[in-house]
Amino acid sequence: MRNENSIVKIEEMIETQKTLVILRIRWPEVSLIVGLYTLAELSHSLFGFTEPDLTKTLFLPSIFFLLSLAVVSMILYYGFLRTIHLEGPKEQTPMDLLKTGKHFFWRMVRFGFIYVALYFILTWIIFLIIKYFTSTNTGFIESAKSTPWLYRLCSTAATLIMIKVSLFIPALILVHDCRAFKSFKFLSKFKLLESKELVALFCLSTVMPLLWVLLKIPNNPETISQYIITIGSIVIGQVLWLIVAVTAVRFVSSLDLEYDGRITDSNSEDLLKYPTED
Image 1 (cartoon, rainbow, N blue to C red):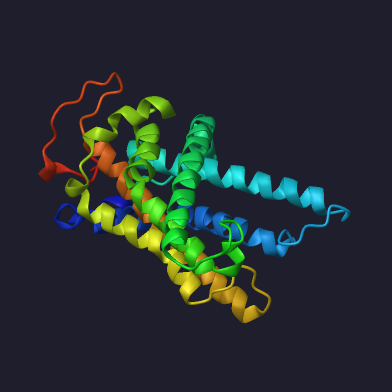
Image 2 (cartoon, rainbow, N blue to C red):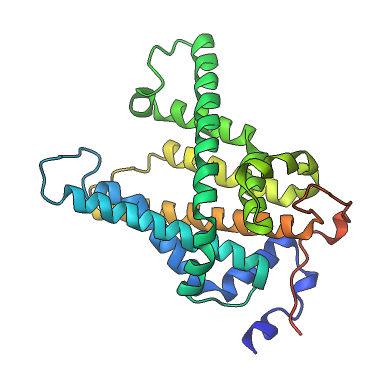
């Protein structure tokens, strides 16, 4: 079997390599998820959402298409991560991913509302602190256009501060099939020093959008060359984040956590064990 041949020496690899092997084996699913997310990212410029015109005939159908694309992409993504926990490198069909992922959709949406609220409050506070100690005279919302590097810097700082929430809550929901609110009680059990590789990957994926701003990669490309550069940056970011998400799911899977709140000690040397097949 191709899967068996691909994982002969998997236990000798570092954890990032183990994740990459899974993604390589399941590359059709990875390509589908990254492709849909990339299309969703580009849709705002493809359909003119940067300057929306409500009088256009295609405006509402375009909104419906974008929402449908976002929902399908998220469900596939959740299904992919859940099957990573359940099946490891075993390939799945898109229908399998949709059937598995739809169970987690509303839970992840509820978590998203909680996360976004905390994220924007924290980002706003960071912006006010920077504004107090500098000569910045723009508003927070206006800074997205006038000083995008400052806006992105505040966003990056807020994301890094909320690293545990970003990394482990979605993984807990997907691995243990628990509610968003109840999953927060497990956060104190996670030690970032026990997952240095994962933290490093997360920091890299978080800082990447700030790098795109500094490199002046356009959010709204107009020429073919700009589209190529923008698509490349989106794909790199999505692949990197997928590596982070898969590694986080495998990390949570390796811990002996129980949904009823009882938690037993785990051996840090055995974290992120790669699932083998008979």
